[in-house]
Amino acid sequence: MLAVLDKFLGRVVTQVINPIILLLAASAFVVFLWGVFEFIAHAGDEAKRSEGKSAILWGLVGLVIIFGAYGIINLALGTFNLPPIQKITQ
Image 1: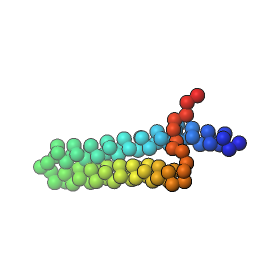
Image 2: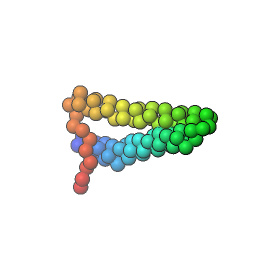
Image 3: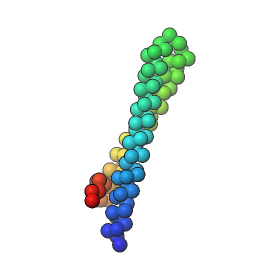
Image 4: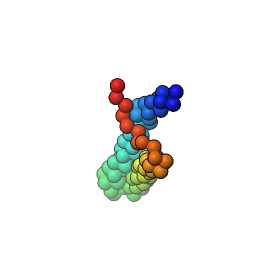
């Protein structure tokens, strides 16, 4: 019974959680790049530069949070001697 639950949770992590983390990281990176574009393209307009700075800041904050959470999860797995979640193949 425990093996079935472990296999199910492994599949949930690899097929649901990992793609969500990847999507969030990609979204934060796109926001960061958009902010850089706004900052450079509208260098003369202070309002647009401010919007670009804000997007850069929030993109970086998002990336730090996402990768920080990923690191905390791996730290917890290592602390409790749990094996890292790997892709399940059939």
